[in-house]
Image (cartoon, rainbow, N blue to C red; front, side, top):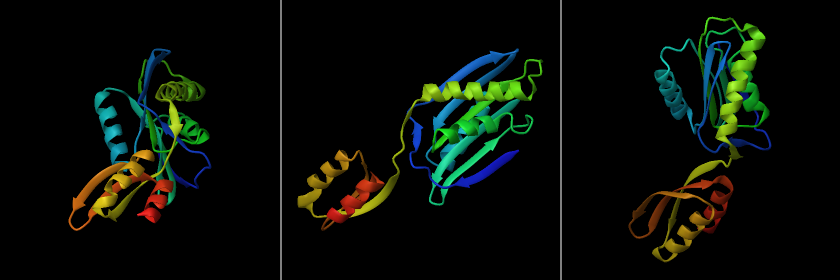
Amino acid sequence: MVESRVFPEPLAMYTFSQLGQADQTINKSRFIARAKRCEDERELALFLRQFASEHQTAGHLAYAFRLKTADGIVARFSDAGEPTGTAGKPIMQMLDGQGYVNCCVAVVRYYGGINLGTGGLVRAYGGTAKQAMEQAGSLPFIEMVQLKVSTSYKRVDELTREVQKCHGEILDKHFDEGVHFLLKLPIDAARLIQAKF
């Protein structure tokens, strides 16, 4: 079962600072988790496909993700054939509760022959996911936007310094009678740069 929801944006949002992984065996079942930052649905799908291909013999691949979109936060989870609410849902509750966005956590299970029961599954999936999330670390989420800016040759250095100062990125530049930039900037900095140039 895959459940999908759209949420209003929380006041404080966070994302993973690096890839996180965890591996534990509980009553002979092996649980392997991976926590990754994903900027969009394409990157998310690639991550899940790659993780699934690395664990083709696993019995289950449960996951949860939250992505920031123009319409708000899109959140989905899958229990991957486990009893409803025992695999993807506990992962989602951790992402929700800590305000994570543009993040996905996936957990595979290699069945060991012993049934864990619903409570045991919730603890196993949730606990393994939590370990991977702790290893991934967190940092404040800063929404980035793309902005086209044109300026004179005289102001190129000034614009470049402004972009560096706000930890932005120059994606492309084109030269003719002026210089035309395509920038990736934090949303607040984009407003300031747009007003200045």
